[in-house]
Image (cartoon, rainbow, N blue to C red):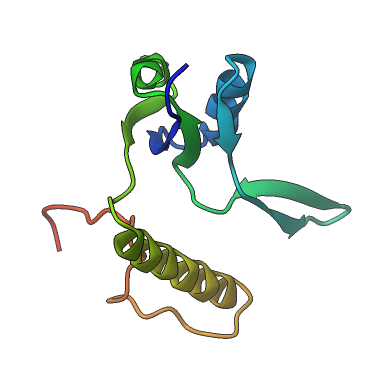
Amino acid sequence: MGDLLWYVAHTRPRCEKKLAEYCERQGFKVTLPLYRSVKKYQRKTAVFEKPLFPNYVFLQLEPAQRLRVVHRRHAFETHQPPAGVRACRNHCQRLRLACAQRRECRAGRVRQDPSARPPFSRRRHGGA
């Protein structure tokens, strides 16, 4: 067994938990940070656990095992995080800032600036 490396798997929408469950069954180390979301309906309150980073699952596996994850229908591709401690530290700081801004926005404390996008957001091409 070789060295385990960290990878970020880009998943299809709402397939994060399915991919994490599959990887755990295969014996891979999986990290899927979740947060609790409360939705109030007319007669009841529902509590959901949602991924902190939608469409992303963090995996620790050998380079040869990477293809087993990509060939699942839940994942598009896997990326290795940026090399170097400084690059990883900057990357993590950007993610923490984006999460804090998203939480404040959802709580209604701060209006989200439409020009400020989280680090993994995708821009739509074409149209206005």
